Image (cartoon, rainbow, N blue to C red; front, side):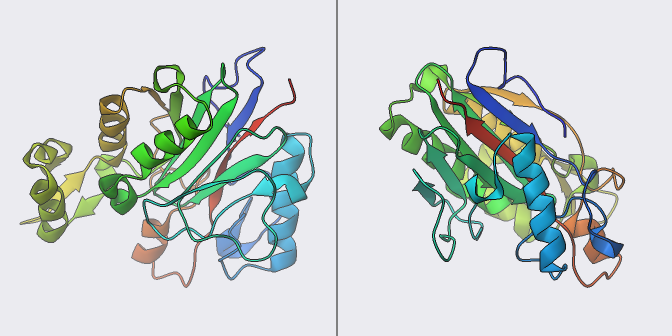
Amino acid sequence: MISEQLSKAGSGIRHGFFTRAGGVSQGIYKGLNVGLGSNDDPALVAENRRRVASAFATGPDRLTGLHQIHSADVVTVDRPFAGERPKADGLVTATPNLILGVLTADCGPVLFADTEAGVIGAAHAGWKGALTGILERTVEAMEVLGAKRNNITAALGPMISQASYEVGPEFKDRFTDANHENKHWFCTSNRENHSMFDLDGYIIHRLQKAGLEAISLKTCTYADENRFFSYRRATHRSEPDYGRQISAIMLEDR
């Protein structure tokens, strides 16, 4: 597990950006695969999720996540979900001892905390979610629970780096059609008519524009195979599936 500055002493916050280390899955899922949507052995995924929950000194029934769909939809939660997980990409809470988790394998995991108000959030920010507003919608949902925008810190976890994220012209066009200034997040690729996209930089830009302090781990899921699962790496290798790592945050009882 790797982490940043949300969990300062006395903050009442626990959080972690988990790597693939420390799990029981094997083969292409080797390590801490927590992907409920993967084709991994469900019993191994359940054990991996139990280990994540134990890092927060609680049980797996308190680990709450979503059926992620690359949307800008956010859910407010005050208890673990019963039955099917909601289809959304952000979740927020003011309830202690409830772990909010997002799964990624190249997309950007973002954890949010207002330690003064006791409100937290988590967002799965792939390019589509970031472009369509998942970050801002998560902040707005936190504000409904009493958070103050200028007190919210956002921490970005492991995601694909610009050096590994080559995209075609239609991808770049989506961003520049939305805002011409988005051209700043692309640089030239070695391949004709292709570009390299800076997802981490773009997410930081959106967060700062929304008035938040943003911290980034600056780690690349694609390049660091020993620590991270990567959808793009698995695709380039023609592997049939891929694991998912988790980023999670919890309020402690005050």
